[in-house]
Figure 1 (cartoon, rainbow, N blue to C red):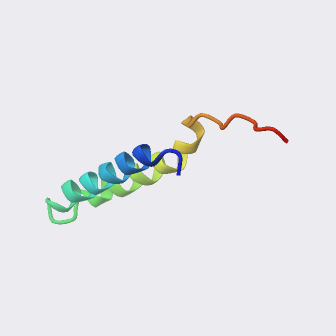
Figure 2 (figure 1 turned 60 degrees about the horizontal axis):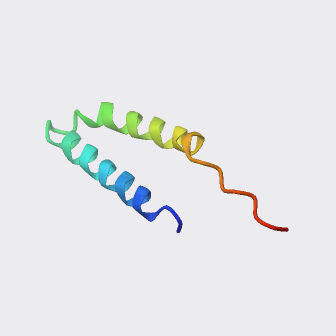
Length: 55
């Protein structure tokens, strides 16, 4: 687990977004879930690629 801080931050943001989306009687989930799903699907494109190791 090289990027545990980034993963913890992303998990915290998901919890925050879902928590805020639950406040208006679950109606916020209509916006929050597709937004989180789209961002999670695109996230690997923006991560740095690991350096090629020996071998």
